Image (tube, rainbow, N blue to C red):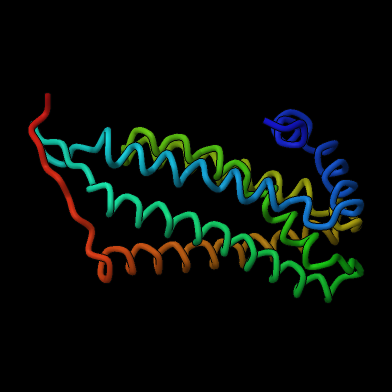
Length: 203
């Protein structure tokens, strides 16, 4: 785990200063972070749905075929990367109403680092469980919200009051974007690609 990621969880204020400095010195520095960390939930979900499975009825385990799990994982990966890029675009567009004038790359980079808790939470995909998913994703949502409100004023060089107003707008748009694209992805996978389920007795 790189130093900026560790700092996001231990010293978020300092982390945002370091990240902004890196993005100014090296445009698209965020790409490696985004493309690599987005693999965590995709790979873990593939392993969990094909090798571990989940139980819907007593004495029965349900898994996905390798082909169906691969389709789901690829769709999830594309959705997460595209979602971050779209949110970054909205941040860039909304910043025009404020004094800050960040570049599109800086806005996408900010979005990529803000959703880092969701990438890390993807480890839970190794053990498919509704309650585990709710718990982990809930914690990731709370910490991503914290990172957003703490980081936006620092990253965008805005006054605190202005940054909080901007962060509230970004939070609302980001939630709408994520829900929309995730629901669209699930509907596409379920209705168009028709997943194949493998059922087996427990044990």
